[in-house]
Amino acid sequence: MSTLALRGPARIVVRQHRLVLWTTGALALAGIALLAGAWWWTSRTGDAFAGTGCSVEHTVRGCGIDVRHFLSVELHFSRLVRYAGVVMMVLPALIGVFVAGPMIGRELEDGTYRLSWSQSVTPARWLAAKLAVPAVLTVAGVSVLSAVFAWAWSRTSGTHYPAPWFEWEVYGAMGPAPVGHALLCLALGALAGLLIRRALPAMAVTVVAYSAVIVVLNSVRHGLWPLRTDTVPLGSEIRYPSVAADVAVGWVTGDGTRLSGTTCTEAADTAACLVRHGATARYIDYHPASHFWPLQLVETGILLVLAAAAVALAFRVLRRRHA
Image (cartoon, rainbow, N blue to C red; front, side, top):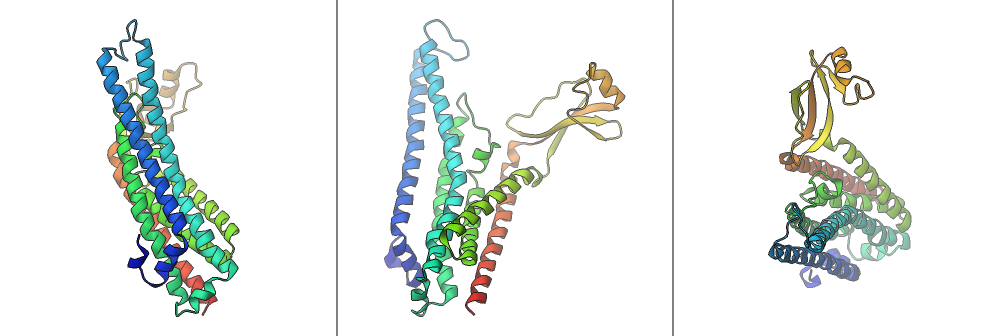
């Protein structure tokens, strides 16, 4: 971002933190290059393996080394994608820590904010600039990284080690949810910095608050969108949906009462035990792959509402302290 195109406090924010911005951009480009290079190598290895005439499913004499090498490359690519997903999950916390610490907390702790306020910059405008610049960069940067991750993840579906969409490090790294998480952390960082006015404690509080949000969302995520349920008669084999997130499996009685999936697991005669409990069918609750976007949109909406509330509270704190 060119500082010449900016005016006032926003330009000052960019100039103050240009080293961090350039470093972050360079690391993001390096990560994108790593994923692209890893897929290029995986694809090239796959083409070479196809040319050997060997097969993973029906390995014949003389193909062992080629098969192991091919599967090893695919496994490493799948692991790299998962590691990238973990980084994407940590990224919002880093954004919040940066805002809570160097961007707001340290200025309030050292008193350097007085210089800005003495130059016809109101406290509200000062805070708006502190939030607007990282918000714009966050939305742009995280959106690009999320799209790149989605591209890399889609490539694992053609390998022997696919990464299911419902795994936390996959689900949380693509779609609009990463942007929502990043904006919420940005808002939490600003609020913590204004409330505590000390860099390190504000950074710690931001991490704790974001961790709490993650724990809560992971525990309620399956309830953000209605589950799909399949049932089969007692004695029939239940077919687990392909590429679906299983939530609950159990038994249903004749009057519709649900029994836990652990019912009769320790009985000597499972069938007789189920009959005694009145079970007539087996059920499975799950989210099919088509629920990915509804879940993402609902979760993102919740995150944006929380972020807006945190920002509003931050401005309120600022007005009360400097009225």
